[in-house]
Every structure is written in C-alpha cells, then in structure tokens.
Length: 348
Ligand code: SAH
Image (tube, rainbow, N blue to C red):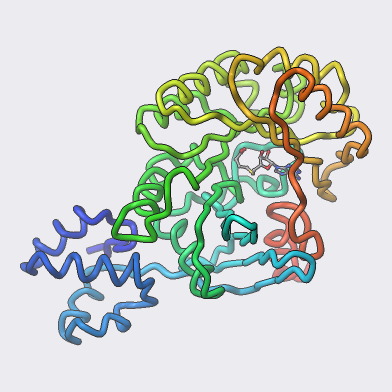
C-alpha cells in the first residue's frame, strides 16, 4: 500500500486516518501539533508518542521533509536564497526577505513551469512536476527553523504557476493559515498568476482573504503574446473580468505585476493604455525592472523610462510601487540559482 503524505492532510483528514487505525481522537491533535506547530523533523521527534506507535505511523505515512543543499545570505540586506532538495532528489528555490513589517518567504509551487514566459528562467526546461502541499509548506517550515525567526508573510511567486497546481495549492493555503499550524493570516499571503481565467474564478469561489497578483506585463493582448504564451489562450478582457470578480467576492484589491522590458512594453503609449485598462479596478501596480537572463536577450528599461512610466500612472490616479531588488549579490533572478546548480551537477 502506498504511504500517505501525512503533512498534506488537513486536521479532519488526519483524524479520519488515525481513527481507521483505531487511535483515540487526542492523538490527531497531538500529531497535528508536532507536524504543523512544533515543526517536527520526523516521527522520532514526537517524544510523547510511544516507540511502538511511532513505528505504526512510519508504516502508514510518509513524512515529507526538504533538505537545504545551498543557502546564500546577502551581505547587503539579509535576504537568504535556499536551494532545497525534494524527497525524490529534484531541487527547488525559495527566498527569505526581511522587511520592517516581518519576514516574508517566497516559495515555489512546481518543479519547473510550463507557462513559457519568455523572460523567466523557471520555465526554460518546462514542467517537471507539481509540488505537493507538504513540499510547499516545508519550504516555510525549514526556513523558519533555519533562521529561528517567525515567518509572517508568504508569497507564492517562486518557480511554477500556482494556479496550474490548483488543488495542492488550495490545500497548502488551508494548512498554512489554519489555527493549529503556523496560523499565518490569509491577508499576509499573496499568490501570483500569469492569468489562468477558470482558476482565478475558482479561487474567487473559495472565499479566501489572500491577495491575488496578476502578471500583466502588457496592456494589450498583442504585446502580451510576445512575452507570455498563455496570452494566446486567455485574453486580457477575460482575465481582468475574472480579477474584478475576485475583488468583488473577496473585497481584496488585486495587484498587477508589470515587468518592464526595454523597448517592448516600457514606453508611454503602453503606460497610457495600462492606465485606461485598469483605471476602474482599484488595483495597485508593481513595476519590476526585468531581471535579464542570459538565455534571452531582453534588456532592463533604463531608470528614466521606469520613472516616467511610474509618474504617468500616478498622475492618472493609480497606486504604483517599483519592486526593490533584494539579495542582488546572491544569485540573480528567480530560478537562476537552481539553473546554475543543475548545470554544475551536469558538469556543464
Ligand atoms: N507563475 C506565476 C509566478 C511567477 S514569478 C506568475 O506568472 O505570476 C513572479 C513574477 O515575476 C511574475 O510576475 C513573473 O512574470 C515575474 N518574473 C519572472 N522572471 C522575471 C524576470 N527575469 N524579470 C522580471 N520579472 C520576472
């Protein structure tokens, strides 16, 4: 019989499984607490559980953990980039960023990605597999243990498209924000998507309080298609209608991410079109100077164009921030640490 991934079970599911094993209800509370609150490394850590029962648990359940194969700490701002090995040996990246308001962890949701955005390093080798909920949680659990500091914010903006791994992602959100676990406020969790319309609508129907970030990157389908293959399937009109629905159902304002690429999407014509497109959506724009990857020849917009783009939006009543680059000294854009690790393993 295949073992059950215990860290991906909700409290009710765990209770049900333990009941099937003939165990009393208090065991579920005890074990859930060891896993999601005390962040146990294995069944061995569960000192108030007899060796015999621990062995029984080991026979029935898989205890998923990640191990850090590389950690880089920025001298500039304390950002830490982690390269974690999954139980099957694949590696993923996660990042800890220290802000005045708390510690924020950026996690991966898939090994690789199949969305194909042209400027993104995560997608160069396609999708290897989805991450399980336990593997998403473990990125945060391991980082909290490694730093000894509480993680207060989570952004699902690492490798992968979270809404292309929908069920595991939703389960992860419930485990992360439930009272018996780290109990992180849903309002402190952000999920970023390239715009998978049916799943944005499904997400609205979950009635969560997480922030939705849309990777917009261009104000027209035409320009967007040159950057993001998914734009051929999902059109801006439908994507924005789904975002509006998310806002109306949850009351949470949507964030629009806009990576500025020199001469592709950074001129004033685009700024004007963008302002027109989202003016009634009460959203907020996060401008990201594109982080060039060596496999593509995209160039970062110059500071003057970025500032002009920002000024134009602000003059038109749109709230804008420019994303501060964190950990500049430790390994470039998303997915690049992983790529260089894989390359070195291949000896290439
Ligand atoms: N699949 C999700 C998460 C991707 S990463 C999504 O598409 O939203 C988070 C953000 O970083 C996305 O907006 C993504 O488009 C952007 N991004 C990825 N690589 C980048 C790069 N090299 N420079 C600037 N932004 C990048």
